[in-house]
Image 1 (cartoon, helix red, strand yellow):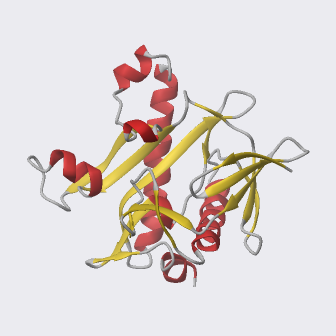
Image 2 (cartoon, one colour; image 1 turned 180 degrees about the vertical axis):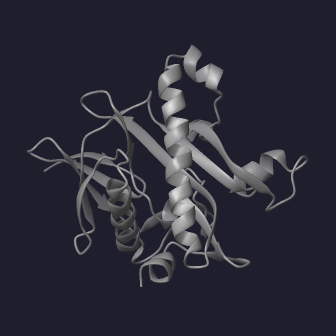
Amino acid sequence: MQLINNGKTKDVYKLSNGNLLLEFKDDVTGKDGVFDPGANEVGLKMEGAGQAGLKLSKFFFETFKRRGLPTHYISADTEKRTMEVLEAKPFGEGLECICRYKAIGSFYRRFGKYVKEGQDLDGFVEITIKDDSAGDPPISKSALLMLGILTEDEYNMIIKLTKEISDIVKEILATRGLSLYDIKLEFGKDKNGDIMLIDEISGGNMRVYKGEESVTPLELPGLLLD
């Protein structure tokens, strides 16, 4: 295997068959020792977070596969904390799609004059550019098209898939009495240029609540999968 990226929460290796291997770490994003899925830096280490993230990713990706949704997922080994995936071409240098069901986190910090904290947002989708030095800034549809990062058809497909996938996650969590406040997804293109869901789907990239209490990435697998 060839290490091609030492990421914040995962290391990425190139396999001899042309696919990629993601190795999940126990590092999670946040600031000052507090977990925050919207942060663009590693904030703390949670022992077992890597395996927890992979268990959830495996569960969700296999659920999406059964529903006919396009993803990069091939297989996972939860004991080794690894997931084999198709190689994907990013849009620009990477985009993140955040589906927001509640006004919380950075959305509330930016728009607190116009919304109450925790206010319903009805699955509003916001796209941000992956750029740590710039703080992962939000970008509009017109800017994405003008800069050539997305075509209009690609934009429409990404928004559609974000809503569909996020709604599935929200519905599954609700069966266990859990509420999805927001979730961060990433997309790329396969070798044929078709759009697919990439990265991971775990407690590390979503905010989940049980009643009024937030659920940590380590707690979520036990609440959802057991």
